[in-house]
Amino acid sequence: MDITIGIKALNEERHIGGAIEAALEAIRGLEGEVILADSGSTDRTIEIASQYPIRIVQLANTAERCCGAGAQLAFQHARGAYFYMLDGDMVLDPDFVEAAKSFLDTHPEVAAVGGAVREMHTANAEFEIRARALAADRNREPGIVRWLDGGGLYRVKALREVGWFADRNLHGFEELELGSRLSAGGWRVARIDHHAVDHFGHQEDSFSLLIRRFRSGYAGAAGEALRAALGQPHLGIMLRRLPQIRFSVVVTIWWLALAAAILAGGWIALAVLLALPLGFLCWRRRSVRLGLFSFLSWNLGTVAFYMGLARRRVRPDQPLASRTLVTWPGASMMYGRAAE
Image 1 (cartoon, one colour):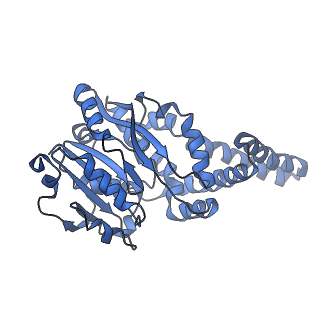
Image 2: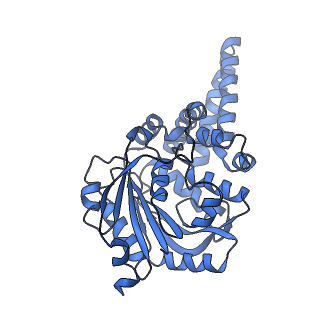
Image 3: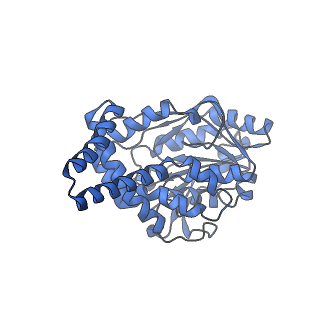
């Protein structure tokens, strides 16, 4: 089989139909398949997805639910020589897969290729800050990049060489961690000048999203990623690529300075220490609202970083328990060469 497109989802009833339809169109003319890896949706995600000629697998233990587990579950069931990972709130450009596959076929040293990711929702503070940062991120420009933030087409041979697709323990940064393992293994990762996906993201209130991510464990993903790299060949790469580690160190030093000022009774110093980072963030974000959000995010993120660093791990190469909910007979061939 040429290609597997995996879609990971949790309660994505608003977008899952569009995601599946675009994925099916992308494998038209190829021997391919689409797999939905569901992490225990309680809305109409499965009902909607069941109407399409795809395979649907579901995480058996919802306590294992996280970004890495959803992605790895899809890869665990994949049969293609190439693997594309798509979020349930993304719509794939159907023409991108052929362009990416052609690039990989002519660049055997490249393990994966991505394209342009268009952020469709920037109404809340987190995604507004994210969109601004990504607009200036050289890792989103065409050429050899460090990792594929936003998905891409992967050569399964390279993934097997570095062990697994996504670390099942990670609540985030699974693509960065994978890119670091590929780099340590001698593989290259590229981005081409071709539209790949539209990402719709979350539309809930900024602070509600921040608290939800703290409670779900997502905010502690940087600590989890650092722990996963300890003693591994890609540790140095992760230390260079994960700015959240540096942020957490800086915030920790700031906390210690606050504690020292309180113990010494230095109330003026305490006031200055509190005002400086808040003022800097408001200036940098060019917005009091975004500055306050960043201030809270950095502090909660540092707490979560240490929680993630201490979180118990399962061997990432251990298969995830799952169940198959839907398998359409001949689904892979319906949109493959046999249909032509």
